Length: 222
Image 1 (cartoon, rainbow, N blue to C red):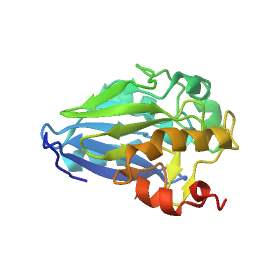
Image 2: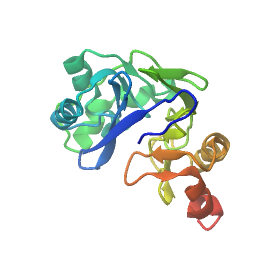
Image 3: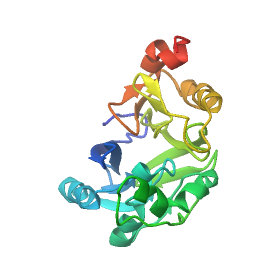
Image 4: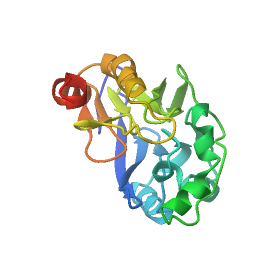
């Protein structure tokens, strides 16, 4: 993923599928500085560390889109290994981060730990890596504290489990609401623009325009 604009902002990204849920842990970096962030280290920390080494980048932060176990199971371990802060999700997901161990037990995920991020994120906040700046959007529905990250310069977003290629996040887990999720997508993500590409929490990425035109949950077919 590299794209130019007036500031010549460029980024690279590698997706590392982790856990039994094949969650898209994302290593994203600024090509100018080789500073990087890891989004949603759900587990399999050695695989994530191998990807970091292969990319030849320096991770400065861990960003979390929400608090579900497949997205946060490796966060505390990776934070300790890299000695970097964790940013996100929104504080509404605190109840999930307080029960990571319990959630892990339900899925036979060992070695996970409860933790508190170094910074909770909210609507209107910004996060940065190298020369790249991302706006934070609070997008509840899949979980109460889900957030998405958007780079206007790159025309790129990471949307976690809010929106998928051809689908939307499940809403049958504690704190979920389908109506709230659709509202988040409609009010926060669709206005970003049809040209915006995104990585999501599972499966292949897509673009806002493609989902607006074809996603059955957005076209009224579901």
